[in-house]
Image (cartoon, rainbow over all chains, first blue to last red; front, side, top):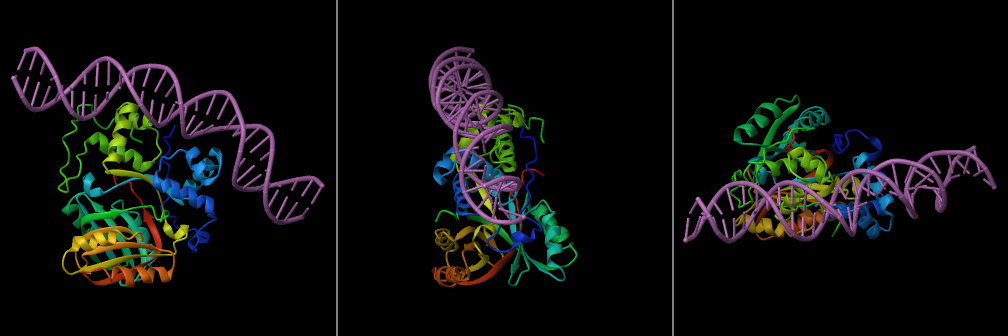
Length: 171
Length: 171
DNA sequence: GTTCCAGTCTGCGGATTTCGCAATCAGGAG
DNA sequence: CTCCTGATTGCGAAATCCGCAGACTGGAAC
């Protein structure tokens, strides 16, 4: 049945055509579909179709394609602090050498939930989710800093999550 | 997959992990449900029930409750860069005076998708999503810095999103 | 002990949604 | 014009969602 892993291809490793801005062929209709699912990830296809002007089957096909292409994922999101993960941090990383290879190494760590290459005084920003202080300490000091190419890190431990939305489409 | 029910029925609803921030208490079964929905936000209730050892109706009630309580949300998430928002940045903010009031002001801005209070050389970390350079410039220089109490900001413009997952529960 | 009582779970119909597929339609390319 | 390829539609069949009534559990009060 639904036992397939529904593999989460994370925000696309190396797809040349997609790295340019604008992304793949996302027309206004697909945008509208995404917008609908940003309000409610379980909204029925028929309701979405009524909102965007398509049939139920067409919406279903487009959604499946967007999922397969990795353009979007439909998931439950929580505040980890309320679900047992007591230590979270944003870690700024400075790299010497190839930034992308370091980013790949960090991406492979399950504790790193969010990895982004940036311009500014950090080359990478990484969000780390841990169970406690010891765990956090180990991830930052023993694992992230052990990655070849990592020159230095700076940590910002989360005190309180104030906002977390995904409805940029609706404004 | 997890073929084995995660918890026996006798898992009492009150054996929560503590949450100092007044968050609702979650037992092992609810955690398992969240975990299922982190893999696939549209997974049928019956399939979830089979995985966690509950009936379809029970899963449905618990999911509805988790949504109502704001413990989790089921939504579509995307990489904004692939969907028309060409400029994204993490902004570190230093505050003098009441941090929380500044955080509330930033939370009210629709361009701020993510606001978190931190310990470290920044008091707040804010993720900003904009349409172009002008938009980003205006948000950072004219709006964020105009908030009373903001002493200084430092920006990290996103170059490429490498990873974005929500499956902390499955590891 | 017994009796509420609130919260949760189960079972089960009926309404709704999802699924798969064949047919139809739209837009190029040759 | 014809042949493609891809998107869309319509429609039964199967699966899922939904609401509700009854049963179960643990705790509090007596």
